[in-house]
Length: 80
Image (cartoon, rainbow, N blue to C red; front, side):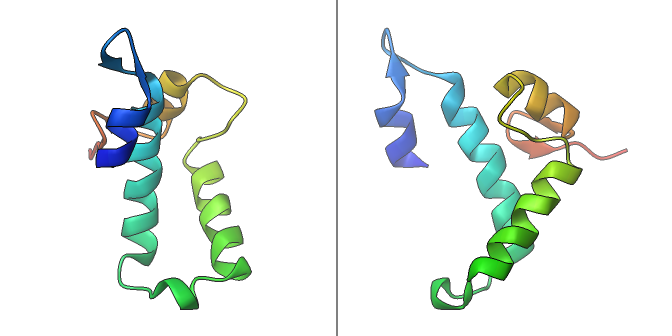
């Protein structure tokens, strides 16, 4: 995440891309946090993609809309 906040910068400020990456990483860590990289294969990736779709995250909507519809605010999962 540190790298993303320095790479995705416009006019001296992090872009919305960093928030999208933060949300995606949170879903990844919640689902596969203890999984070794060598054990994360195509089936794991497909399952993660399905989870993100279920949460309303997709590339064809704006980052803000995807984050809000997935129930996230400031990179944190909103709970009821």
